[in-house]
Structures are given as structure tokens and as C-alpha cells.
Length: 230
Figure (cartoon, one colour):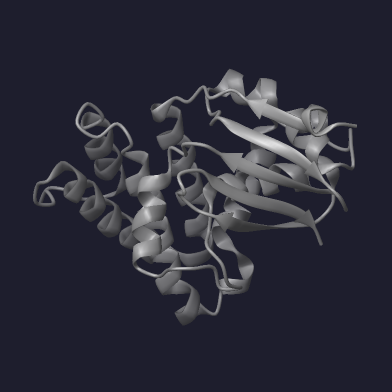
């Protein structure tokens, strides 16, 4: 099979409101591990990040996560990528809590995404239809378009049941740039990537195999990573 035949491009169809709803659900799920302190910390860091993007002082009337979501949504006209504020808040909160609760190995955010995908039932018709990660991800194209949560991505099949992901202009870069600037990384080393988290969880649900991921190149200007069987 040629390289061209091995490549598959997912069209970018992305709804920022759906992104906020999905991230909100992930925050609720992750808080089951960490407790109320997690949402409180996410709120604090997300509001600070959003305010910096809007070039204003953080509002004083934020009383909970619903206020945070509203703050982000009502300012989509000024900062359309506001869901990045939530991603940044999650990463900051989790990094601070991992050490104090010795929960780093649990990969809380990853587990939350996987739980949400399983609970939604979106992938139920695809479970165990393939053992190949490339084919599993390819089979979700219609779902991604239907939910308007697609980011333009190219996948290339590699040896040993692995795939390479290339995202030419990721919509989550703002959060990742800030986190990389602060030197934040995974507990096991390397940088986090919400696209790799999402797709690794998807592949595990469909194939019933275990995978890990590695971000190999960030913002040059594309992002490149790998999902591989473990």
C-alpha cells in the first residue's frame, strides 16, 4: 500500500460551543477524582487566562464554573478560541494536584475523556470492529463531522499498529503555547496534547487495546504526534 493510500485527512468542522460543553463534561468527570478543589482551581486559572487574552482584569463577580463558562461564551466575539482558557485551567489545576495527591499515574484528564466517550455511546457501534488504531480512527470521521468537533488532521499508518498524527493549524495551540512556556509536561515526560488524548481514548475504546501517545513536534507551525500500542 502506498503512502498516499495510508494517509487519511479528517476535514476540519469545529463548533466552539460544542467544545465548551465537552470540556465542561470533562471537568465534571475529573472532579470526581480530585474533588471540589479541582473545579475551584480550574476556575481561577481559566478566568485569569481568558482575561489576559481579552486584555482586561479578571472579573470579580465569578462565583463558580457556570460563571466561568458564561464569561468565555459571551466573549467569543472578542476571543473565539475561549475554550483554550478551560484547557489551560485543567492542565494547571491537575499539575498542582498530581503531586499532592500522588495521582499522576492515573492520568485523570485522559481517563475523564475516555469515560465521557464511553458514556455517550457515540462509539458503541464501532467497538471491536477493528484491532488497528488507524482503521479505528478513520471509522470515527462521520461522528466527528456530526458533532462538529473535527480538527483538520492527517493520519499516517505506521508499523506495529501505530499512527502518526499531523495537525497543520491546531485550534488548541493557545493553551499549549502557554503551558510549554511555563515548562509544564506529563508526569511520564513529554508534553500533553488534547488531540492525542482524545484520539488515544477513542482508539482504546474501539480496539479494546492499550495505547500511549507522544507529542513529537509542536507549533512548527504544525503539530506532530504518535499513538502507539503498548
